[in-house]
Structures are given as structure tokens and as C-alpha cells.
Amino acid sequence: MTAFPNGASAVLWLSVSFLSMPALAQKEKEVLVINTPAQAVPVAVQDPVEVANTAASPVPVRDVDQVGANLYQSSALVTFTFNSFGEPAIFAPIPPNTVLIIEHLSIFAALPSDQNVYVSLGVGNLAGVQFRHLFTPTTRFLAGGSGTVDFQILSQELNLASTVQPSAQVGRTSAASGEGTVELNLSGRLVPVAP
Image (cartoon, rainbow, N blue to C red; front, side, top):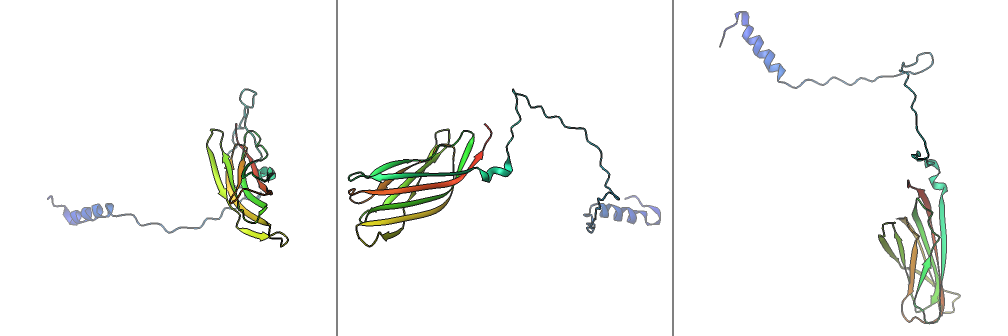
């Protein structure tokens, strides 16, 4: 080792040691920016931006603040005749370039007292993928105390998406005899999507 005069080797060793140590973090400081006409923050003026909106290449526009205003409500009434046990229900179509967000389903059924109703709700997308969701009312009470007809009710919050017209298959269990009706109501909102 080369000897340095006046303890220079010790200073050199200490300098190298401090270089290999992590730096000490500086304490955070609060900064208050005042941007008033009297004390304006200087900013550089930017060049204007030009948007080309031609028929061949239109700029997609949608009002994102008005999504909730595009409400969707549709009802379907299914009537069971004396020997029928399953009937289809079709709801209002969905406009092109929109997605239906189904937020609520309600079912009101009036059937003979020995029967239960079930609903298979179908939603899907334009690629042909179909999803079926099964609902069975659990709230039940007698109609007018006659003992021959029961009312069955379901009110269900949902969060389902569909780009195709929703449909349902409504069925009843037990002996498929006697007449009855099932009313279905869907509500939600239509969300525009780019074509």
C-alpha cells in the first residue's frame, strides 16, 4: 500500500466508504402554488390541435354524461293454458351499437297453488355466446284466501350485460294443469359503444 503524507490514506479510505453508503433522504417540503391573475403561473402557449373529422374517418362522439338517460324497460306476459308447462318470453330489442345493462328483474306469477314458477333469462353477445340465468320466486301468498291460486313474487337486483335482445323461458313445476299467468319486467340502461 502506498503511504500518503499527512494521513491522506485515511481520508481517501473514508471518502470511498461514504460513496458506498446509501444517501440520506431529504425531508419533504410543502409547496404552495398560487395561480391568480396578480401572480399567474407562467405557462408556454401550445400550438392548436386540429381534429380531422371526415366522412371517411369520422371522430366517434358520445355524451358520456347522459348514459343514465338511456333507460330501458320491457315487460313480457306469459299465459299458461290448461296443459302447457313452458312458454317463451321476448323483451324489447336492443338498438345497434349499444349494450344493455340489466339492473332489475321482477316476476309476478299467478298459478294454481300446487305449482312453482321458474324463469331462465337469456342474455348474450353478437358473437353468439349465450348465458342463461335461473330465477325462482320464493315469496308466495294465497290469492284472496281461495286456496286454488297462489301469487309468487320475485324482485331481484342484477348487473348483467347483453348486446342481443334478452329472452326468457318460463316454466312451471308439478302438474302442468290449470291456467295461470307470469309477468316479467326488466329494467336497466343502454350504454352506447363504438361500432
